[in-house]
Image (tube, rainbow, N blue to C red):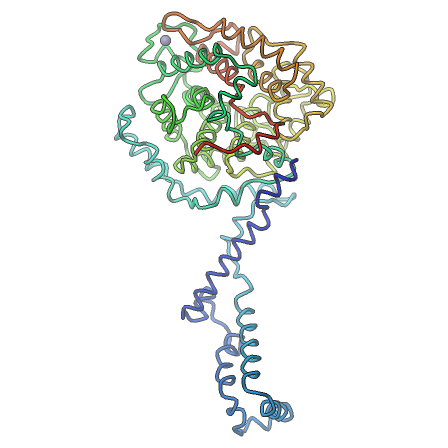
Length: 560
Ligand SMILES: [Zn+2]
């Protein structure tokens, strides 16, 4: 199944070849349009007597065979060969001589143009890494996109009231990203490997559920009118707690509309990027983008906030923030890549790709994981968000180096227990949350539905059932069960759906939000965090197409 998908995507080799060819074609054309040969070859001067000289002198010989008959001092030196050639020319029809000589000329010209001039530009395009030199590969990957001029957007942003939406920030972002060569770059560099081929099996259509197919999927997968109403109320609550600059805060009480009316603010008030990204995801999950839906302005302002907070450097576009570390970056990368995948807004291409580049940079080069700080030995929780971002990016045909995915796989190997049915945090273990994350990652990385460890892990989760306090576990475990489908999923879904619909606040300013007392974790993110996670759980019917469904490959892609 993966194989057929892989053949439908251009492989790395032909992409590279194509680039080489077009450069070659350009050279040939240039030469043909009257440019001196030296210029057509990049200004290199050919030595006297080289192929170019021969090519230049040949036509005279070819068009006037009589010239060969004119005796000269040199003829004696040539001796027998000249004589033989002379005889031959006399006996051969002139059209044949002309044909042969033209053919020789063409061959010589081909020899001149074929050897590619050494060019660093060509080398930068190589994405597939040699196993031995992964670090160098990451460096070259970062280079082509360095030119993004984020400062342009900053300047524009400062002079624009973000709520005045007749100005289009996305258009400004587009302008800022123009320096990046868009063209078919993303397509040519779409990652491809055995591992990612599995993800590719539902690429392009993975967000279909958010568009035209939403109602059908909702009904099929076990969503209800009640669950959809809960999602709608949640989006209203989120929109009401957005800040004027387009951001959200885990301390939602600071939002001008709220002014402390809703309880349970989170402690991570400084993690504005993380809060903004997390709040955007339920909108995107419901099919609301800056181009479509009733929350276009809110989504646009939020995306704009993220793009403006991005710091672009040699290591990619960082949305890392001290208050929210790599969690914030991973979440923001998911929001940017999903928004780009759903709208194909060119203005988001650069920021989305840069965010992925930074994830690649921040990966622990040894263990393959991610943690709070770039390049630290990883933990399963942070790994989950980064992998989801890479997966979304892959589906949007952004560049994701296969080696990054392979290393992430190695990280999962290092924390798995029970032969891969359970997962720990930084070491082998079997915590419920880390197990759910690990299994979902394994699904995205290509484990088949009937993989014994996956089956055991899914049963283990199903036996535990949904948690009444741990929304993080619920979020991941629900996705795992949803992808597996079947009876285990139906039972799980009935429980969690009804519990969430029944526990959503219906009154006052808190209407549309959720709160569960989940200890340490929920104290940090507060009501905003719990509400976002709960909403995304109720969007599970259509937020991502099930990985193992054939029709997710064949259905049309309506988001354009
Ligand atoms: Zn409020």
